[in-house]
Image (cartoon, rainbow, N blue to C red; front, side, top):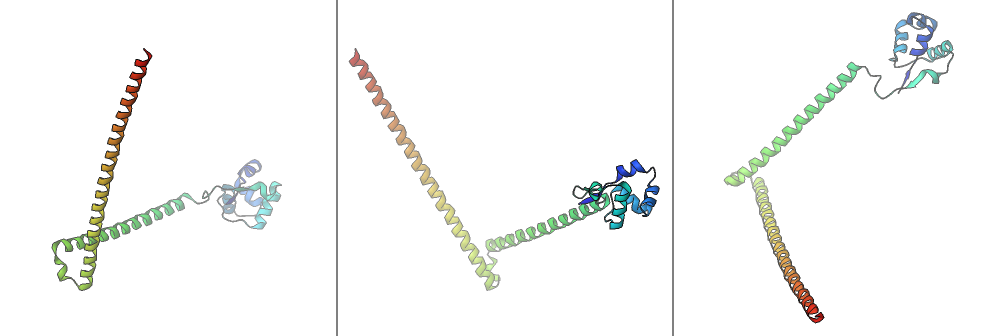
Length: 186
């Protein structure tokens, strides 16, 4: 974004903003907006009059503006307020949807555990049977993983025991070799 930066030029040449407005043939309000850098547009004739009045080029009076500095504080606050309100509403909707899903799962589990499945329509009974089947498969998978884990741990323990025995035997052999070497040296 760009803005008109003429404060220093106006202050150095005019003591009142009124005189500046008359010199370039614009209204006082327009001159005030130009002076403060809050104008959102400028006509070519006005830009030309500014350049002639201050004996400069447009590049000398047009400055790059850091993002969103031209938005008045009240507008920024309103935008932030609307954004926060929108985010709060979205969070509440997500929470309601989440609570509905949790309640639906609780209802299914409650129906399965209380045995009220026979009172439900056949399609729902099929879904519940499928859920029960999935629960059994999941339980079997967990049991199988636990068995494999236990087997792996026991195999690791056996390997560690074998290593300890091997290490002890190796130490004994090296100790015996050292003793026999020292006995031969005498």
